[in-house]
Image 1: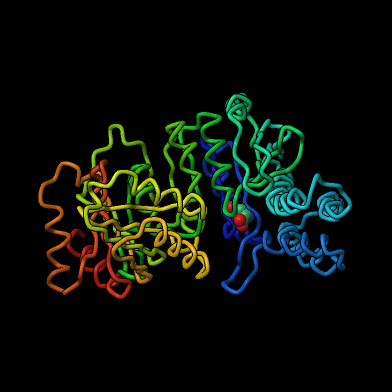
Image 2: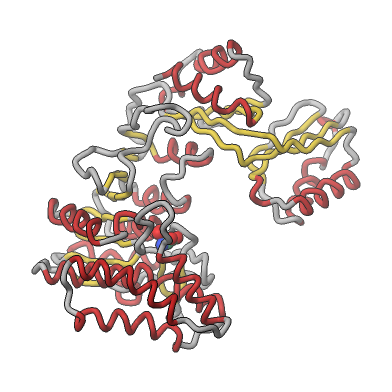
Length: 449
Ligand code: ASP
């Protein structure tokens, strides 16, 4: 059986719902359907989840909520109208949206979570009604009824292990199960959501829970591409890749899946198929376990990301000094900063960070403390740092890959500031200046494709 998740753009309006229903009907093994909230219909549009956040804020600030509620409801009404659903069937959903303001919650965070979750909940209920109206045996299954239990952080929930046992019994389902993505319930019965984009996680958890043969993730792109189409024109679609290739590529900008969504699929060894709701006949991209994977190409993809910064420290005899790195890490810990990489040399150390964690103030304070505690001979903050990831299971046993990557860069005078080849040997990371990224990615891509 298959678990199928539809993203927000796939469920944004009546026309998109129609495509989703055709996809469900086309394959009887599609048994568990996970919905997102209605997403954007055009680029300036608003996602229902964002409208719900507004609705929650208005409620918290005791402002009038009727306009925003009306705006949210219109999104569902438009979909219902497309399928000529009777007002009587819709009334309970409308009431549910209203009831949100009248319920009591343990605190403001749980109020926010409950409001947000209703984007997917109402969408799943609406899809169920539409399918039932078409005489399809579908049932809406809320987390409290399936046993989809999460830990108690209201807006960044984690799945509880017992959920997997609870979900197992739905493997034999004869009816179509329609499940809302993005949230679960805590053991005390409160709604808690995953972080944003978390419907992917719900799908992966279900896929593992029912030991699905396949987790289909329907979105609005034809496939995952070997390079960013904004950098390389018409890059090749990746037909098949491994979980860890995707992990390495996501790290530098391949934002296909929610970060946490891969884990349950890996744990359950369920293959994932990323497909396009608008072109369901295309094969999309398969993401599979490493075992028995036979790479066709040397590299699978090349990704890049500009949101990095680096801290360069130089100190004579650093290699002999015990506890230097420990003290440095303690400072990161104190500032609640995680680092990505720490390539080091005999007298120097570079630490690479995700820039999103820093404000100018945090950066200055942290650097001042490093200066004071560690007294490096020099300390430099490099803001203009980009990372390029070249990834492929196929490079593991190949000699000369590095040469093929660096030769065209040398030709184009692209300076490489750092090279890091991980223990897995399926990725090579290059640090360059931001301004060189487009050239470097293009050159590397054309070297291999
Ligand atoms: N609707 C949620 C969001 O916009 C979750 C999702 O779409 O995956 O973040």
